[in-house]
Amino acid sequence: MSTTEVIFSRKSIRSYTGEMISDKELHAILKAGMAAPVGMKQYETVHVTVISDPEMLTKIENEAAKSMGNPGMKCFYNAPMYVLVSVKVNKTMPTVAHSNAAMNAQNMLLAATELGIGACCIWGPVIALPRLPELMNELQIPEGFVPSAGIVLGKTNDTYEQREIPDDRIAVTEIR
Image (tube, rainbow, N blue to C red; front, top):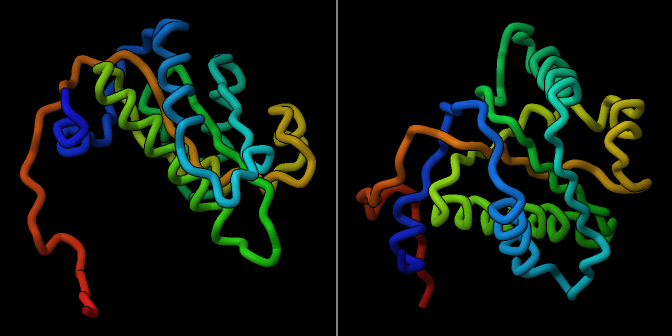
């Protein structure tokens, strides 16, 4: 697939077989995330945690559901892996850190699309985890880092196909 084909094919997959992706596929996806731009080349301000332990996934999913006010919610959709991107926020430019995480996650989503791996942004744990220092510790999130983006990964029976994106999907103002 060309870059444009991947971009226009990417979508949120919410149906997983439960089957794990291969180490080779995971490496390719993580490498794509590492290729994302990071403000002022401060790569040490981005940390990625790959979670595939079923008990830990259940614990995170349950805490996310509680924090979203929906205790029965299953935000991982049976995906066997959650990749959490945490950042160290610079107080002078706080939005840069979150942009770094978003670009990292987007690169991983695009790589997953190209590989035919199911992927979806999942925000519940990003909201819940900062309120749970014990769980942050269990996940070995470095001191001073906060979760900022997360994606699930796994095998799926769903497929990626190019789609039309309306020109007016997002408002654009041009100043020339």
